[in-house]
Length: 179
Image (cartoon, rainbow, N blue to C red; front, side):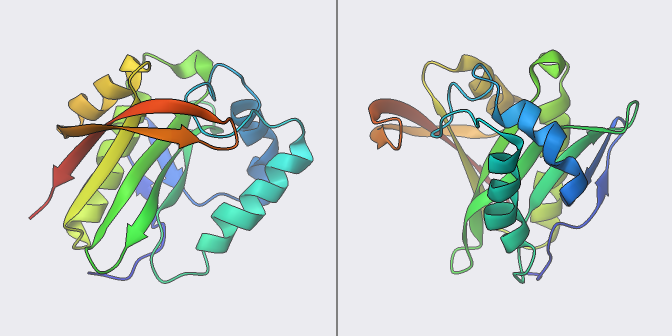
């Protein structure tokens, strides 16, 4: 597996790049929106400073590693950060990870997350990953449609207690094999 850390990717409408400190305010628009974060394990962020801390402690920290894929999704037309696509749960032993994504509400339904995710999946395949998984809450069929559009296949369902929200969620697990 090739060591690579968030290489720049460009699609027809998007630039996928590393986050910078200049992205904090735009990411706060995503992380603070209750509807955007309804199906994510954390509570909506309350401040720009909380967003800055999250970016520094989680995303920026990954940029120091040999392998990471933590993308800001930039809409070319406006040059704004409108979302994110990332690979979490990276396992070097199995050459795998879990795809995650989020998008500002006003851009929903335009095929942006499938476009961005497809480009990231192509890069992962090119770099020698064996497979990628993604999960969604059964009450979030829009995310399931994204996974299906990407060509991922349903594998199983399971229940998990979500922290810190402290309630049970039934997830569907999807997977894409590259080998």
